[in-house]
Image (cartoon, rainbow, N blue to C red; front, side, top):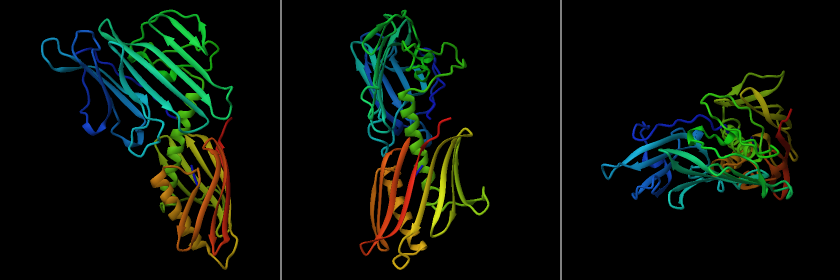
Length: 371
């Protein structure tokens, strides 16, 4: 059983006057070398994972240039929480970012979601050093829908040359010099007819953006991660019960930052309930379920609960998911779960088999809530 990422806020310090936080070497997850400023000497760029593991999908960029008077590197750019991606050792495969040198002096920053949800995407941000600052030279983006082959899209934007293509067709635009500190890829309306690029040009400017395949995929990944975390800390983890929100209900909840989760059910050996996730006070996801003991002579509620908690604890801890199927052998019975769909829309069933007979069963379905 079972349960967006807003990346914003950038900081840029000018060359040789930038200040950086103390960086734990263990948090450096990728690096590239190249001659970024064209002075014939080797410079450095690197990705640094955040200190807070709960926000391990918000990655910072640090770029160093070689000192003109000494063979030493000096920090030139610090852009915290700039890149989305998975950095933990047990993170989702297919969401890792990468950093590499391209051409003579450019930096390619690649991010992706080829792992979760029907909306899959990859993007590359090309950064170059111009007039003593790092600017966005280019941006490419590709999106596809695993359930609808006709729903894919692509964008190729050369900011310095003023060239933009949407799905292979040229779109009129003007050359622009966009400092990396003023770029925020969450502010790109990828559903706009001409892939108009909505950019932040003043820190603190409020820009309202529409959902995109990439944004939705990010949200699904973050939601899935929170659901697993919440489930592991409530019923399965023996969390503290909450006051009943409805007469006769059994409630248990979990909260982290703007995320909140509640599991509320009625009954005992035969029971019905609902799980809900809120983000910043808005309900965004829910799941309904009904479970029952089928053969009381084979298993009781206490033993069924023991099997379920053991199986789901293993799923959450080792596989970091709550959907996708699970089999688990226990002294009290054989646990099996099967589901279809992903976190956005799914259904499934879990059973416990004792002496080759189905002793317990639970059916569930749920997904995203849309207004």
